[in-house]
Amino acid sequence: MTLSLAISPCPNDTFVFHALVHGQVPGAPPVAVTYADVDVTNTAVQDGHFDLIKVSYAVLPWLPDDYALLPCGGALGRGCGPLVLVRGDQPNRDDLAGAHVAIPGELTTAYLLFRLWAGERSPARISVLPFHEIMPAVASGQVDAGLVIHEARFTYPEHGLRALVDLGEWWEAETGAPIPLGAILARRDRVDIDQAAEWIRASVRAAWADPAASRDYVLAHAQELSPGVVEQHIALYVNEFTEDLGEEGRAAVEALLARAAALPAPTR
Image (cartoon, rainbow, N blue to C red):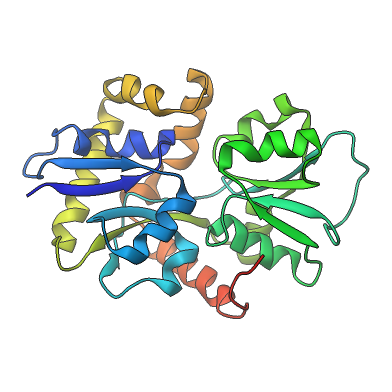
């Protein structure tokens, strides 16, 4: 049996799954990995092609019954939320009513948080762009604002941008809960759920025990990121919730999905 796995090329995912992908987890089967942007995996999960797949927590209400949420391997934490960026020379504004905003995907947790924050002040136009194209689009004036995730927290000033709002800070102030961003799912009919969780936990622990072992692999897949930014990224997104959601993590997921249920289906 070969396990099919779909994750992003982001440093947190490659760091967490290095040992599993490279056959260093005792008892785990060989792994065939596909690297894809989160907007791609959020759509691919509907086809049921992968045994294990990383998706946004915002996708959970639309999951096929074939998949189960694993309590580990994902991204959930504090101080790690999405940002809404505008050009540094734009005048201050309280909202984005009437604006053109680029987002990384309609089913991303980032966009769900954005919709919860915006409320009735919704932008006039939404465009979905690949993650790496959003900051350049804002900087060039192609769009008025951009919703960004992950390493953009550390690099946006280099593009002449500033943060209009930190949706992580907003969420934590509203709820007191950490932010559920990315989840790991397993196919019920092809993977033993408890066993898969143990393989992933073992991979996380191996990464923490020897961070240098995954360095070349992580840097090879990082998108033009400096080693310093990669280290910051991993330190922020790989935390105790990655090893196990626990009661606090599960409560945060429930809070997010409860608020999501009050919104209409996402649309541009």
